[in-house]
Length: 138
Image 1: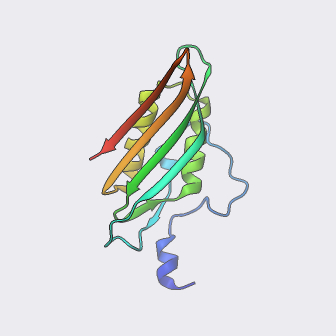
Image 2 (image 1 turned 30 degrees about the horizontal axis):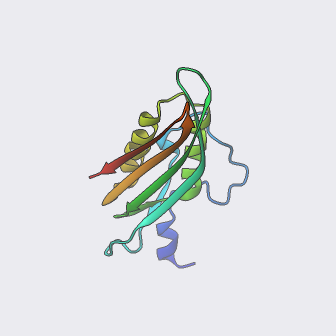
């Protein structure tokens, strides 16, 4: 591996660690990023998490959703294993759906500072009502 490629992976600790468990709570400090080697070009990254779960803060019942993240990176890209573990940590976290989508956006903005980002949460029907939330930057 070239020195340039090694530098772009500095700070990546979860990739290749098969013993890493799901964090107890979602925390942006668990998100990792790597250097975008194509930062001079606009291109889109689409991440789809169809098996997202969290807890209703009122009833404690599970909420199911498809979380979709679309972004145009600038200098950094989110490392997907760290993102997977971060999203999985919501399964024991009581939160309103609106809070979840906006928190994911805020945490990713803090870590990778993309040119553009949209986080969409398509929450499963409950009581005959489906809820879709979209949070955008800028």
